Length: 207
Image (cartoon, rainbow, N blue to C red; front, top):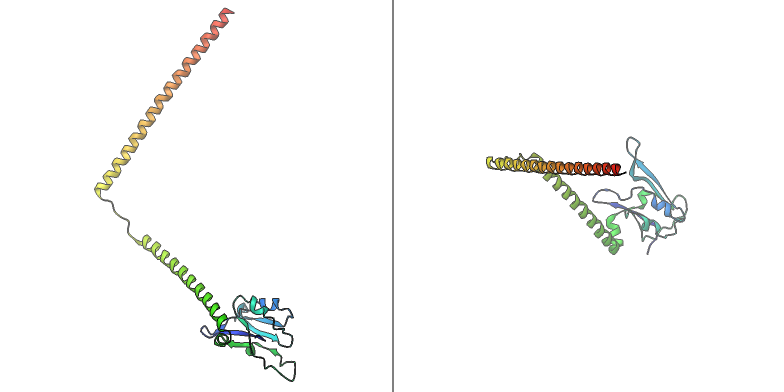
């Protein structure tokens, strides 16, 4: 059973679950919800409602507001004893009249509350795991940066010098071989050039 919506108050954090995002007011078919966002001491808007109103005379109890709320901040109440003598202002419920503790919602909708709590706890555990992994990686990086540079033994330094000398010798040998190949190629080209010149001279004399 559902009737007029209610706003959920988180008793552990001592704050509204509502962030005054306004989604419920936008999706409401009869447009019976209106919200005023709260502001800090500097006049900057903050994610909580300063005022929240529902016109019970217009509300059609469709529960669209509860289905679209991304923070599970508004739910449908079971209270149906709302009879009054005057429509206004008695049937226009404000934030104080609409707000109930989360324990009331848990008692009213136990299965739904348990499913939402399971999802919330899983997300919080995943977020904690990511933060712990990030902190561990940062600590290991800082530890590696602070660690003193490892000193090599004289034997290791001598071995590195011998390796460098061997590489340099191999490079010089390769360069010399390459130079000899270039000289041989140049001599071959010169020989071909002379042969071509002689053949051209012979053809000219015969002609």
